[in-house]
Image (cartoon, rainbow, N blue to C red; front, side):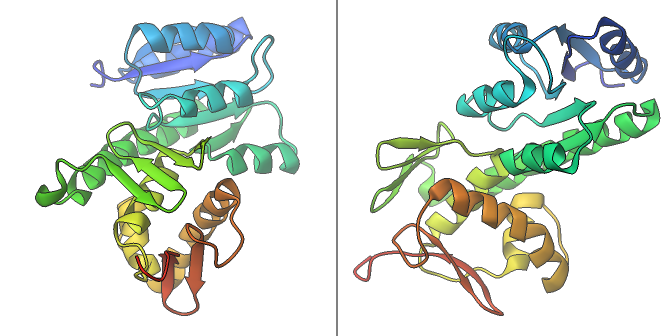
Length: 248
């Protein structure tokens, strides 16, 4: 049973909110509900949540805005976030995924399919937490800040800045940036990076396919031209590295 696992369902449609809640509760989850983004933030501030399942089109604060607020908070940045929306246009789905959301599901959805995604995202979140814990060598236990030129990463708070601007990173984007920064200037193959971000062992081709959207999203948020210090460089046929000063 999953009674210790809390899922926050956010939707302004009462019938759908009830149906999704019943399906999750029947699978053993503890379900919390909210009718809009503002209510969802109140819930998040008052009790722990293991996964967020949110609609997109809601009054006052829509799902996109809620996602951005969640990812801005270091305490919630690693919480899996799934959109469940009636917006089925490719442009809507593409935009949601470009934000860095963990998944974008469309209504209507069968309970079995929804539960399969929820279980998978929760399992991946647990694996990612283990990977992050294993990523930090004992000799670096007291290190809390990584700084490379204008790029600064706070390991304890899971926050990063480029100059004075804070970067709004998903959990996987943060882990990827941290890993590249720890070995700045060194090339890491896709298989190694996908092991860190997805806890997945696979071949070069599949690793590259899975990693590419994450790299593109992270590059977009860094807003650095190719070759600038702090940018992510693709070494063709080998892997990726974080560009550092010559004297670094």
